[in-house]
Image (cartoon, rainbow, N blue to C red):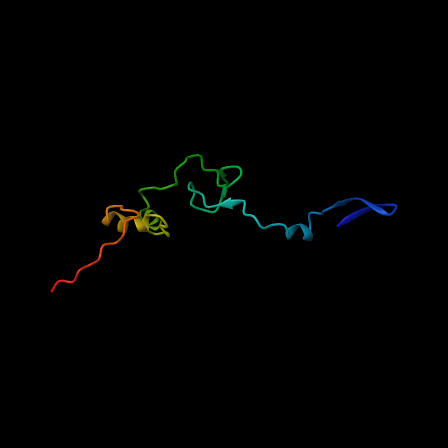
Length: 104
């Protein structure tokens, strides 16, 4: 810290851009981009740092392997992985499960 002292009291404390300022870095500016697929989407600016103009992720038919790597089902699928089970049960919610009676 740099201090300017006037008599017995401090006039102002200025933080430098060096080592002490690095401790304040805890938030992320960039997140995953839908356009390029990389971690280049600036959250505040709302744009991709790679410079892609379109709203869709780049995808070409001449590269089947790249399409396969980024296809649906290769990621976590946090929402979609529960849909198949819910569809099988008719998307019911809030109902009590019926007792299964064993056949004799």
